[in-house]
Every structure is written in structure tokens, then in C-alpha cells.
Image 1 (cartoon, rainbow, N blue to C red):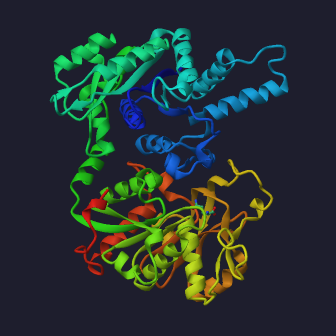
Image 2 (image 1 turned 90 degrees about the horizontal axis):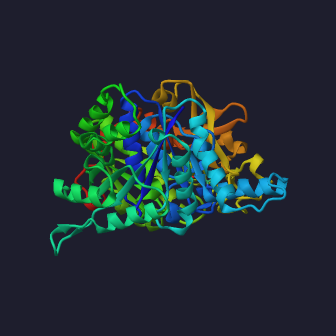
Image 3 (image 1 turned 135 degrees about the horizontal axis):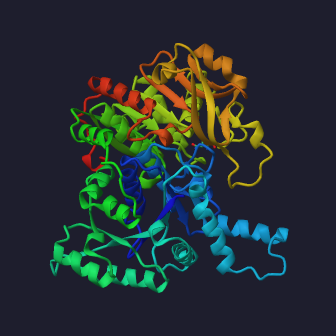
Length: 548
Ligand code: GLN
């Protein structure tokens, strides 16, 4: 029978609940426990798949095709175990289930209410992963901040779970902020006291309080928080800002977060933490011997969360190569034929990002052309791969109006076209080609060398595809389809034989990169960029402000 840990947030959003939840999970996993993490989000969208990155950052996709919150990416990157549909639940999903049941007549004769019907459905889903018998501990992160109107049913469900289960089987970890007032030169505990009081008013009393802070908490402050929030001093955990999110598990270990949690859950006889691989990764990360500049061409570059998994995959790939990867954000709308050279000079590699719609695509195509013609290592992901195909069609095959029908339905050369299975789909939510599909790699290709394997599976999120009507023209001119889905002949990878490193993939490799298993394309792309350092010297006009 699994035990449950709920992670709530108080005072403000963006405190890093996902990272704290993932760090706690990592520590428990490192002590030999089987742990999973799930996220319950209080918004009404059924999933974040229809949300703009400006609203919600990257949409993370699981093997089984769920479009989810980006925190699931952190869970996978920290734990190296896949998440699934069950790991992300929204208010919309809960209500949809309850309303469908009501229409089927499941509640015939009854008034359907938030309590008990909505809260029962929340609890059913909170327990689902625990019921599989695969996990000792299920950590549930509640999205939003305590006190929000929309998170009330979730907090009520947690209250009921605590009431139903033995005390040692269900605990609450509350993450709050201890602000520092520089004028008074003081850390302030009042917002934390208020947020714990709010949570208590809703019937939930936290067992552990994790305090985000920019300055260390002395014993006196910890005692004060403990006293006013009614927990023992050892249940007040300091969470100082860290240089990288990957240091947080070690900071939490130092603070004893895992030990207090295990004590509250009455789990005894656990092993000492084995974090060898994690520590090796951190060592490499902080002791890079080389540096490369990789240009990230996208239309959401001003927003860090929009390309979260790509940025993290570069951190993993950089560490294993002992290399600091500087990501240079370049807005695709800012690139034109006249300034492309100026914009991209000094880069050692170029990544063209995924995306939807017409905005910025001409800049992306210019960037691909520059990379192709200047032997600059190139990596295109999803829309980035499609842009590479269009660029080649226009500038090598000479089809000047070649395009994707996503952007130009009238083009005479639709080299990227809507997938057959997508043609009759009207609804937007959850209807793309989603999740993991197998892909067969050509012998003697760059892709095959990178993966060291002929059979791979990767995750997808797209509607358009490489148009096979033109495949022979591309092959004859040198753009090779080196990876295909065998069952429907879909081109998944294109590469240029005559280039040192030029690869475009229709899928999202960034979603599978973890600290312990960096993704091979990212690893080899960084390596290619390192080898390219002599071609494009690092002393460039690129400012260090953009460093990740
Ligand atoms: N808009 C493109 C498609 O749907 C690419 C999607 C993406 O980059 N994720 O095919």
C-alpha cells in the first residue's frame, strides 16, 4: 500500500514546488524507495495542450501521449522514470469525468455537488498510481497557491485523504516564502504564518514546512516559524536559492527533508542515499573545461519556460561533454536575409525550435540556410526539422514557393503536408499525433551513429509531416530521410550527407533527456559544436546576458 505526500504552496506562485517535489522524490528514490510524482492543476482546461507557451510555458508530452504541465519534465529528468496520463490531472479533467457520468445516469436521482462528487473524483485520481502497487510513495504536487478559490476542492480532497488514511500514510509538505526586507535587514515570517493559517482554515495542517529564502534561516527564525505554524523545529526546512535546480536535492539532503518525511511516514530501515551518479553529474556541470555558444532560434525565446526541456537537455549534454553550453536566444522574427550573418556569427551550433503557425518561420528558414551553407552544426526539432526541409526545397531544389501547408495552403510545392489521419479532425484538444512511436534508422547514417542502434522510440506532438511525394527529389539532391516510422512510412529524421552535422527530427528528443541519461542527439550535437569552435571563435559580439 502506497503512502502519500502532498506538496502545497503558499504566499506566492513560482516558488519551485515542482523542483522541491522532484528533489524530495529523488532523495527517497536514492534510499531505495519506489516513488512517483503527479501534479494536480486547478485550471479548467482539460489539459495544457491548447495553452499558448506565453500562458503556461512548454507543453510536456509523455510516452502515452498525454499533453502535460512542464513540471512532469522535471519529475522525469530527476527520477529517470517515465510519467503517464495519470500523472497530470486538471480541474477540467475532473469536471469532464463527473459531468459525463452524470449524463450517463451514474448519479441518477442525486444532486451532483463539489462535495462529495468532485472531491471523490479528485481523491480517486489521487490514489490511482498508488493503487497500481508499483510505488511505495506517491507525491502529489498541488498547482496554484493556498487561498486560491479554484484550488479549494483539491485542498478539501487532501483533508479527506488525511482523515481517511492512518496518520503515517498521508502527510503534507507546505512550501512558502520567507521574504527579506532589505530596509529592515530582516527575514519576515508573517506571510508564512498567514499561509499556514489559511491552509489550516481549509482543514489541512502541514506536517513539514519548506521555506524558500534568499538568506539563511538561523535557529531563532526556524523556532519562530515552528512555534507559530505549530510544527516541531526539525520540520522547518530551509530552501535557499540554488545556482542550479540540480543542486536542490543535495541541499534538501543537507537540511534533512527526506529524513523528517520518512520519520513522519514511519518508514524505518531505509538505506543510506546513493546519489553517486547525481554528484558526478554536478561535478561535471561545475567543472566544464570548454564553452560553446549554441543559438536557439524560436519565437518564444523571451520566455524561459517555453523551451524548458530543450534548455535542460543542453545542461545534461554539456555536463557529460565537460562543456558549458551558452544558449544564445535569437528571436526568429529578428532574422532576415540581410542580417542573418550578423545575427548568427560566433555561434558554434544552431538549434531551430519547435512551434506552430506562421510567425517567425521565414527567419527560421534563413537561419537553416546559413547553417547549411556555412557547415555550422544544425539541429532542427519538429517545426525546426520542417523548416530544414522547406529551406532545402527552396534553395537547393529551386522550388521558390515551397512551404508547409500549415503556413501556405496554396503553395505549388507542399513539401510539408497535413498527415492523412489529421485531415478530418476538427477538435483541437488532444488530437495531434502524440506520444511515443517507433522509428527505424538507416544503416550508415548520422542518426544511426548517434543512437548506436537501429530501432528507437521517441515522443511526438505534431500534425504536419514530410511529404513523401517529393522524397526522391530530396534524396537525389542530398537530404536523406535517415529515420522512418515503418508502419506508415512517415519520415522522422532528415540529414545532410555533405555536412559535418546537420539533422532534423520530427519528434521531440528533448523530452527524454534526463540527468542520468542525457539524450544522444544533444550529446553529439554539443560535441559537434565543440569541434566547430575553431570555425567560429568564441570571442563574438554575443553578450553574456543570454547565458543559461
Ligand atoms: N506545427 C508543426 C506541426 O504541427 C510542428 C509542431 C511542433 O513543432 N511541435 O506539424
